[in-house]
Image (tube, rainbow, N blue to C red; front, side, top):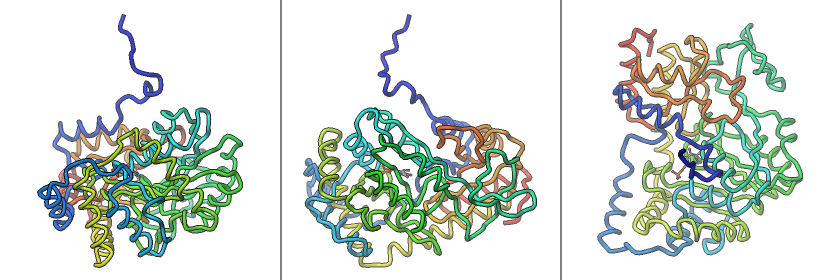
Amino acid sequence: MTINRTAERVRSFGTSIFAEISALAVQHGAVNLGQGFPDFAGPAWVKDAAAEAISADLNQYAPYLGLPRLREAIAATWSAHGWREVDPANEVTVTSGATEAIFGAVQALINPGDEVIIFEPFYDAYVPDVVMAGGVPKYVRLYPPLKDEGGRMKDEAQHSIASAEPSSLILHPSSLSWSFDPAELAAAFSPRTRLLLLNTPNNPTGKVFSPAELAQIAELCIQHDVVVIADEVYDQLVFAPAVHTPIATLPGMWERTLTVNSIGKTFSLTGWKIGYAVGPADLTAALRAAHQWITFATSTPLQVAAAVALERAANCDYYAELRAEYAERRDLLADVLVGAGFPTLPVEGSYFIMADISQAGFSSDADFCRWLTRDVGVAAIPPSAFYADTCDLPLLARFCFAKKPETLRAAAERFQARGFRFQA
Ligand SMILES: Cc1ncc(COP(=O)(O)O)c(C=O)c1O
């Protein structure tokens, strides 16, 4: 008899559809639009700064809070964006990616049995983070914009997706966004709720929460004395007319929010795993208490380069150029998908685009993505991976546009080669 030595807290995790699709993509030589990271280089001046830091022998442990220069650059970034004057000594912590900041914050802020509100679809790390801390996830659905059979928008308050026949989603409706039902959000709060995990701009939906939605969330969090972990790693990847508002800047929210970010997303250097959290001294102290025993400190030379990145980006057009380049990639991929017969949903932020696959003849998004990867040679991720409850899901596929134009064009060629309707 084999003994299962895996601890209960991780036993349910298993391998994910991401690993399966990645392996399929390699096996079939597919153009990989599933993986959520850039296939192009980060800025040369940031890479040079890292190389210089290594040559200068800045190769020993950094202080566990993060290098003072990087914490100061993070505080200066908040100030330059007009968000808040933050104290780099007591309100900023550098972590091993946003991943560690979120994990550490959840460990630091809940006790076993506490409830944590998570919007679904969610970034996949949130649920394991809560489960490993003994918490209980409570889900609130984000609903995509849908049209009814007559082609009119459904009444947003009804959100009757559960009863809807498979229907086409709206194509490029610039004013329409994924939305939550305020009554469902209010009902998710209980006396046991301790945390709410918010991701805006959102992976995988591309939604940017509006100031009005943030105000609704804030009001409930204040009323129920709930802390927010705000995962804002795509804060610089927002496309007009959408505007990113950190929830920490809303009245009454600074004192109950830890805002998490990542150099990897903003500077196309995801493998560096430099992240950070900004928040009031008491929440920062809690996070630091956990962080000192999780990774203690993160890469010293890469922290130096991250500081250079933020310092220089504040004084040039880096963020505007980044957004312009990503807007072009987003439009190119949308054209490719629409041309192949898969209407796309609006992308307000992040580097992901959702496509409507309801007319493709599959009843499961995972089967569609397996087929697309294997038979067409284009890899995408099934959004069902981002839901706890997979009943009544819209049929969509998530594609990543953090890719070179030639990669996106290669996907177009795969669709064309398979005789997909093509107009791009
Ligand atoms: C919403 C979201 N949060 C956090 C992360 C992880 O960030 P990092 O690579 O800095 O750990 C990702 C990466 O895909 C993400 O999409």
